[in-house]
Image 1 (cartoon, rainbow, N blue to C red):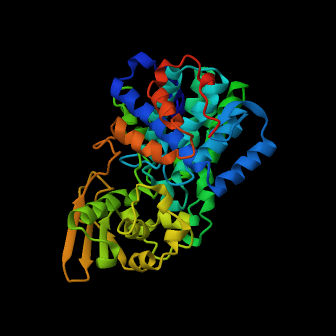
Image 2 (image 1 turned 60 degrees about the horizontal axis):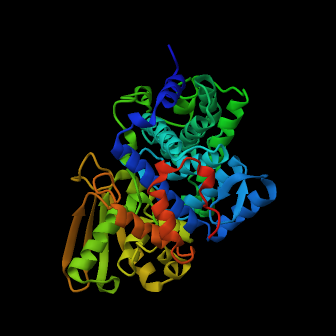
Image 3 (image 1 turned 45 degrees about the horizontal axis):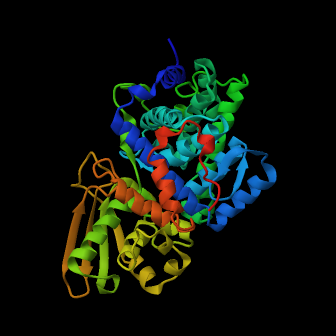
Length: 450
């Protein structure tokens, strides 16, 4: 009987573009476009420049674009930089219901690096992306997101597995080598959540860069004949037993090829952690409908998931990364600024006395009577200084599977993320990416110069 990684490898390699439903291809394409936009924005940030300088000094020249940098590197280093860029400012995609994965940064950045190097087509990239998504989400489902209860950052763990499938397929691995790539990936998982407790949040940005680099490294080593354990997922000392608790091995291959998990891909709307997205959307609804601002508010209560309460009750964030991880800060900010603009998540906002004062007056509680099948659903209750109490229940934010972004909404976000692109270049690039499957050779796609 094959192990889980062997079964997943067989599925990933048997998948054909023509078998994938149109709505699944559309979701994958939108995610790749969104990821490229997030990476362009991330490339401008100081912590991203540190990663770029490291890669420029230590990485060999190659054929894969470093997004926005005007240089090309070998796939592992290009994937590392672009993965760190994409995750640099809480703008990259996720999965809902959450499994602890960021598909764009985990699959899109290693996929682009390998596709450009191996001169793959747009259809090849989309197929490999979907294959990686189907595998990564199932591993996340099996883990029950339990690794984070132990202090691991789940995307840094899952991303290596999913990215290795995407990269391995684009490299043309056979089933045995693909299973080895997954086996190797288990020893390249990394990422801790301590940044959310004691600061140093810059390191969070690196988790997806390292996952992307590890994914390409695992696939390249497997391509040369390097081996990894066949039971890396379900074995006694495998991923689910070491990094997780309360795991369900049966979820690893459940409905494989029958139900498309890729459709759960969600595009974020604000530069903050996903657990606060619905609450921020609810805050914007109250702000617009009632004509209120932060200065009118006495206190705020947010009802949400257990994770929202346990991980994101950060009333005194010490840096921007921690502020983005803080639900109180993100909601308080929404009453003073437009959170759709990523630039408002800044030191200026962090040090704004009015925003910080309101942040301290935000409390989180469990949404006891909320929808059981949607852990992002939130209730925001605002007590005004004039004594009124305003309430907004909300289940979804724009970008979730239930409220997918249309082309113009996707462009609106992409345009906000690419202000450094001159003239009409952003729109031309966006329009080309909308026809990604028409590319015969992704080596011809120019993502290098801002």
